[in-house]
Length: 128
Length: 453
Ligand SMILES: [Mg+2]
Image 1 (cartoon, rainbow over the protein chains, first blue to last red):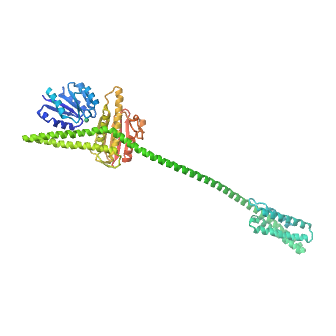
Image 2: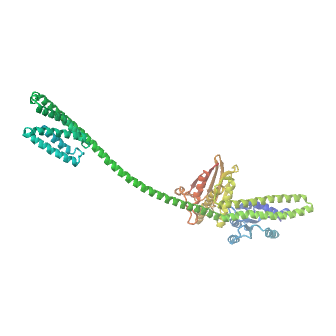
Image 3: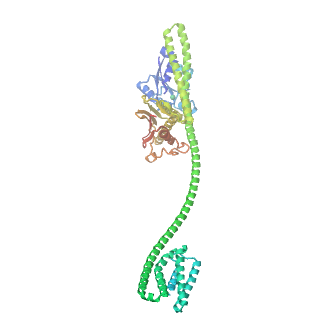
């Protein structure tokens, strides 16, 4: 079964990077990626499908407008079944604890270590 | 006898002062002697002793002759000339009468009436002269008095003048001292101002460092990620080529080419941020250069946001740049204008953040602070607006915000120099205008107009 993942980051080039990194998985059809460049856009995507097809959200924290932590809280409130992990340039304990307390599954730091990210996604695909 | 009496009268007047003119004591002594002589002669003539009296008469003629001569010839007695002229006809008539009487009494008796008539005319002459003289004398005295008055006034003026000159000299000295002191104070102030400007720059640079670090970290992450993924792609490319999958190989190649473009782009981004930082920290050379205002605004909007965000983790805000792509590069001092934008944007985030805090205390957590920077090309140049949805500026404070050291921020939060420096940079540095409009509790908008240079 195909797993749909939503990546949220205000940096648009993140999309290009992810599509190249997961080229094989996308090609083989095990993974579907979609992207949002703000918290609002991400919520819009999740709201557009009922129930949402997305099973996992990876979100940046530092974004203009709604921050990743606010998005995390909102997603967990409305769609508790969706996994949410944070990807942030600020790996400080304050951000980490806040994310974990709000129900984040994992906390990744930038620059993204795609090996561990692949592991995390691979584990999830297996679960599905 | 009459001659002696006239001598007495003349001598009496000669020794007396006329108005302000006085004769010397020496002359007075001589005249006194003359008066005694005239008196003696008068008495001797009066006794009518034969020969002796006649002798006295002749002596009295000599005496009056002397008096007339001395008065007319002596410099010191010029003022009595008129009096002598008045008496001269009487004297003349008397002398001729007396001489004629001595020489021939019968002749005298025959023409006595004529002599008497001449005497009367001489007398009338004397009175006329006397009246005229006294008139002249009075005029003279008046003139003299006026002259004295003028002299007195002149002296007063002179003394006032010297007094004034002294005062002027003293004041000049005081003013020169004051000027020197003020110049000294001005120099100190200028030095202090330079230090403050430097401090303000450093303070805003300090605020920026976190933002700058974030802004550099992001592009560097991309550089690293894109180069890593490219290495992987090249390995895959090799595999695909070995397998003979030309189509897939081409696809991978396209990606690699695109990635190299991205690496270049993000490298440039980090580069421009570092350059911007250097521009901000170094003292402005005031050198104008062609600058992309859209890019400048974008850069400082991001720096400000990320700086505040890095400093305060709870800070959340939205920001938006409304560019005008039709705007060509403009001749401005990029470091200076960047500082103005940074200052206005920081203030905007601060004001909106304060409003969020206030509303949160009242239980309203929905408010999202927002700063919008919009760029608009106009015929004369460019208009840049920095708008926040914060607390607004009260009307009574609006006039003061561009004054140096004016700040509403708590002590230690602002130097109070940001806006006044911004004002100077826009108006003096770029011949522009900076205005503020605000609706309390709604928004504040700073409008910068920069003309084409
Ligand atoms: Mg971000």
